Amino acid sequence: MSGRKAPVFTRERAPWLGGGPLARLLSVLDGEGEEARVVGGAVRNTLLGLAPGDIDVATTALPEVVVQRAAAAGFHAVPTGIEHGTVTVVVNDVPFEVTTLRQDVETDGRHAVVRFGRDWKADAERRDFTMNALFLRGDGKVIDFVGGLEDIAARRVRFIGDPATRITEDYLRVLRFFRFHAAYGAGAPDAAGLAACIRAREGLDQLSRERVRVEIMKLMIAARVSETAEVMSDSGILTQILGGVPDLAALRALTATEAALQLGADPVRRLAALAVRVVEDALRLRERLRLSNDEVRRLRAMSEKWWQIEPEMGQVARRAVLYRIGPEHYRDRALLAFVRSGAGVDDAGWRELLALPANWEAPKFPLAAKDFMARGLEKGPLLGAALAIAEDSWIVSGFPDEPMVLDAIADWAIKNAREGMTPEKQ
Image 1: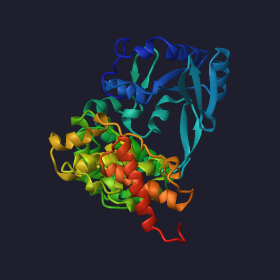
Image 2 (image 1 turned 180 degrees about the vertical axis):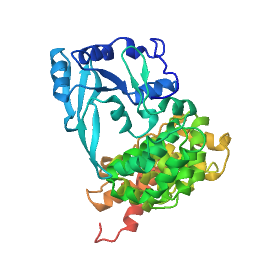
Image 3 (image 1 turned 30 degrees about the vertical axis):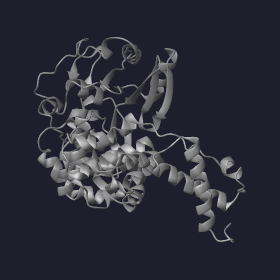
């Protein structure tokens, strides 16, 4: 047990504990020789003064008992990971992951074979970090078997027991060590944990790319991602994950700019700042991290011609970019160009450029195929070429909407399309 005096959560400190769905769940799971306690992130976050997030529950009851008791109480029970002892219980539309106490029987660096148990201390000792292994009873008392209270007070992410042993059980813990340090730690990472992560970094190659992606995306939105990324880079781990040289300065500048402009932490945008300069970088990350199609789409859009975005652009030029790629991609690309420009976060020119989507809505191209067919063109390549030329001319002209100007643009586009195409292509 920890030598630090265990705190007691009051209703003011943890209103979610004293009543509502969680209290109902604990009352159902407690009794008849069984006990249930809140565990993990909700306890850690509350001690750190943060929102609890998802609330997980540990119990001595076997999974089938959890399902039986939940059903008898009118709750909805879903066996989301029942082979590992986890049942999701929904109470008043609020889901709780309820997991039977466990001990690892066999591990291979990626998966664990577990055995259910009734020993709270053994369950705590099989977890990754001390700050994640705190239990909270229904009466509000925190139970600490591993020194997590001291580490939370010091904002120190520390492995439970021997770091190397914890890592060989699941090599994903290397990335989790850095992610938790970036989110909850202060100062330098725990020296023993860092050394063990560096020694075990080749084990990362055993992990599925989907699991790696989840940790990297969570790392990207952590409060101290910039400082932590520097440590990961110095240790060789970041290059191993990304497959390229990280742009630490751009990531640092982006996090500062997000704070100054009161923007939310965006994991895809931060990943682009850190690791994407050209389209090939986006494609490489797609494979290395198994990124979603939407994530790849954004990374590719940011990688294309971001270096052409600058405050010296005229109004027509910047509006043309916004029209071509849309507000989301415009903001992403402009922010990437901003943070790589070396300008300060208060630079007025960059701020004006970034504000364009809020100050100007791109109009719809007013000419359509029917307008050209009325002028004698038939469906085919010539019609498509005339439309493209007309749209380019309309953009360069500043998006006019006067009928006479649009007529002139259409006539000019037809003339140029005919002159630019051979009879065979027409």
